[in-house]
Length: 82
Image (tube, rainbow, N blue to C red; front, side):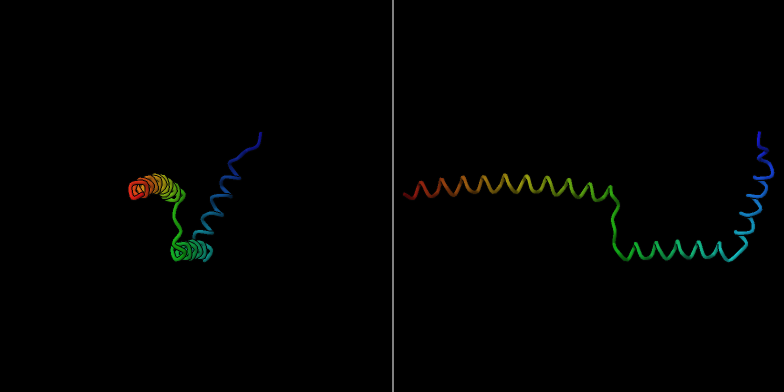
């Protein structure tokens, strides 16, 4: 069986060294840079996309129904003028 004690200790020492080094700041800066770029791109979440897709679907259905009603009314008006 492998003794994980020394590996865990080594891992902790590496984490400690990185947290005290400029690499930690670099990671934070890269993360902030990526977040800023994504914000400027005005991206939305998948959830918001799905919600807007459903709203658009319902709007399209209502528009189709209204167009059909309008066509029926126009046909009735044309028949009454003849």
